[in-house]
Image 1 (cartoon, protein in one colour):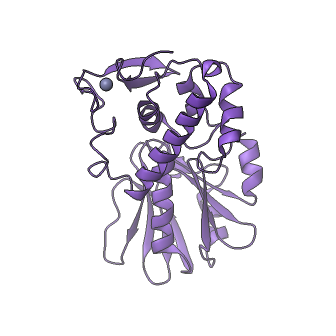
Image 2 (cartoon, rainbow, N blue to C red):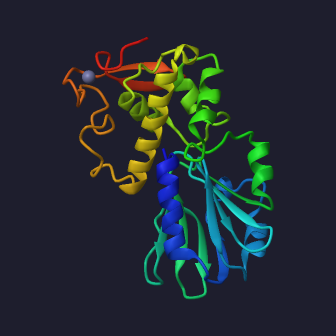
Length: 262
Ligand SMILES: [Zn+2]
């Protein structure tokens, strides 16, 4: 499931392939991913415009298409972007394809169709409507402390709550907690100043490192939990078998030895 680092990687990919070209058409192959906009309206409003720049907030990608018009993309479970040269065939699961005047195309591919495409005039209005919290890479340590320590609940649930901090999903939340050596079921209100600082640093490190590696799982450090999580997986730090438990409504993987419950 694309989380902040994947969406940031898509953003950079879109910037590198699809900006400044006049849009000549929008082909909607499956309108299921369209939210609050019809296929006809999407094409009508984008045709003749250009994608000018982009902005990411949490797991949402906003692409500016002229004055007061933004395309919003959310990648759901399986969404991704693929730029196609004129002779390349779009993937079977491409749901929406943006065509440019140089015959290049940008495909929004989404096998399971939990993704979302919408037009919005105002990014801030959208963020308020969804009540999204600040982006995980935009908040300061003091903001982070205020958000986490004043909430009842487990630290895992708080990291996952998009209305508190936007961008972190199940995989990276576990990775952040592993790096901070914190049990996912730790009560947030019990975290000391020192622990909060450690958690904040782990969050920044994990997200930034994943972006720097373009979220290529084969290149992620072997010292990370991500490449070991799953049945029979062993802790890359101490070698003990990893445990899983449902925490914050999701399956958490962790090392019961390295991540002691406080
Ligand atoms: Zn361990």
